[in-house]
Image (cartoon, rainbow, N blue to C red; front, side):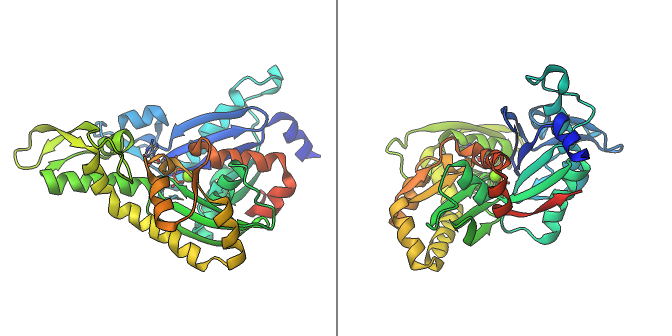
Length: 354
Ligand SMILES: Nc1ncnc2c1ncn2[C@@H]1O[C@H](COP(=O)(O)OP(=O)(O)OP(=O)(O)O)[C@@H](O)[C@H]1O
Ligand SMILES: [Mg+2]
């Protein structure tokens, strides 16, 4: 009875609580929030000053009294209170967006049912933390589904069929590799190596090769601008990286080519490719045959690294495809299971009432 009441006023929402980006989808409305997972806090009072894009702009630029926090590391919550504050803010924000029902979207009583994507390798304690953060941020029910499953559903792959489907979701904190059949993960591997490590690899490369210190943000920009996993055929592509000369301590800017960035990225990318190969080696023959026919699907921001599909195809001898709009696959998968509660009951890891 009370449940019906809440359903009437609140929206069901899907959340991709990512290490780098948080996306919120409202059932029937689509993706309403797409923000970096960054929060700016007052150091002493822990008061939240900014969330998302606004907080990311402050990264590395804050005065002593303010701190910018990335509350997730390697796909899991490392700062519980900040994560909860961020979720609460997003949940309230989507309820304030005027809906078709006009005055029905009352901001004061958001008690949504939430489906959230979590990495497949997390511990019970880490799962509990995500669920508790959703519940204390105002959810009526919180269900967790594993990211590669969500990504496969978002990519419209036939996860419920007795057929092998391989999904590789490369985010900021984790690379998730899974073979799915009959609504479950048959084999999976979660590496805590992904986009953030690629950025670190560029920072290290610049330090060792050029004696130059650059920030994580500049490293990420260079990666997105010219990063690649396979020779581009236009290796003259270049970008200017700014930082500080370690010897003189003075500002320095340097032109870096695509092949140098690729050299920096290669060891990390090789770790991801090896993990894919290991999962394939463990895959039962029937499912492997399906994957040979259907191919490997890539999702997450990492899928956008130039030539990564080609590199994986070359190393595994399998066809490789990039999911449509790979940055939103997980949240769209969460949205899909909100529409199909049968599927939710099959694929959820855990979840339930408060
Ligand atoms: N065009 C691009 N080329 C290369 N990398 C990209 C591109 N666009 C985004 N990325 C990288 O993708 C990562 C973010 O991807 P995504 O939003 O899927 O991660 P996430 O879901 O927040 O993290 P996780 O799933 O690990 O918790 C970042 O490391 C970002 O630098
Ligand atoms: Mg992700």
